[in-house]
Image (tube, rainbow, N blue to C red; front, side, top):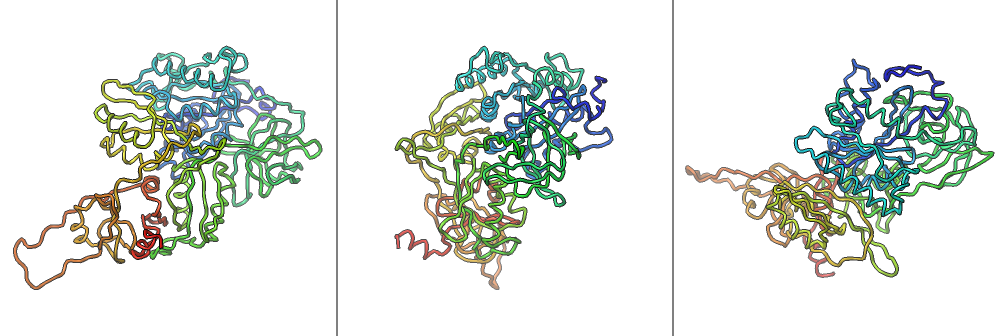
Length: 627
């Protein structure tokens, strides 16, 4: 066999496990993970030179491209030195930890990417903890070493401290943490994914990404397993094809699988037998039909209806199912309602409770970190997830599919432990200019946060806190306002701890429309001193719709449909030019954090609106009196 990276081995080259490597790439958001995968694909010529697929090739989802973050885990394979490397690209945000937990089941090692300037961040710790739980061998990649503010030596030390902290947390022996290898004996590769090079030393930048690929082959162990044992394959990802139906994806832990095989499907729904209709293995950016797949490889199959994530395919004559996948439980919940606003039905295709319920329960098939429950209220469903971003992406996907609905304010999920009420606590890192550090500390202190670290480099200050999840809801936009938009905020779930007491609610009230109609520039101009507006002239409004934020702590009803009365008398300079400030723009996640308990967020394919739960003023007054 040749040893050139561009060679194309024959299928027989992969008949043995030694010619396979399974590796996952984990990192904090925006540390260059997807860009690194792009360069690995190009280095191994998995993408022909004549094809230009742009940047961030694996971010195929529209929301991923728009937001610049990985939401869904993806599988690809590359060929290097006659070895097939299955690469698993994982999400970096803690809200999508359910994706990370299940796809790590397919890996034997991980590439941990760390920004050479930012160093380890909250999500770095989160994804690395998942790798430690699986005892996956790590390769540390210090990325973006060509940044002007890179601090390579300090970041290497910080990564070492993180490894030692996690070793202590998991009770690992520092000298024999990973199969006899010391906890700090991991290889370190310096890289610039953007420029397309990597090396064990900073000067080694002339060989492209080959030094990193060599390190993967040398350090990541080949898959372990018995090819002659009965079949054992656990499903970790689902896909769907209009031609093939549901497609299951997973790694073969033992044995082999062939097209036409009868298998026993074991999982949450019990046991049943089925036949494999089609079989695929991963090849570069796609999948290739195969007649057989063997131990250690990652494959996809079709022909089994209602297969679920966590199910195990095994030999009917010698069943040996794996334990069903378990992931961390949700920490945030909100209620989804059928849209009953006066503007309902103008934009959407799917409007009824039947449509809403079917779509939410369908999401459970592939999103195992999500929970959906029926409620006592007609047309209302409780949805629980890992954070507002997790639920916000679900909402965004649904609105793009043509659904109209409403959601309530996110609520944290409390637990009862040893007779005491506990709540989710998050680890928060906030980087701000030195001048704003005091304001940030004061604001978070009011939200029951405990400061763990205060560190300044003379220009910016890094603050670390333990803060209740309740305290973070609605805090992000406030911190950005306090720091004139210069705060950099990261947080991830830490643990459940005793309840920390009441937290102040939103400091400002809102302005609600008192009439239905169309917002007029004249009316908005008259209200400009009352607070920032959320709408522009010409926006359709209805009674009870929130149109702006009141400068005081109480809610007021305002008429934004009021027009200037015309007369026959005109005088020079009697009419003022209407100059309006730009309205406050919010994302769906920001709107979810902004609304109060008595408010809803109305979602349509074209827009989203904030509204009061009770639209009529008389109904709100009765509710305030407890009538």
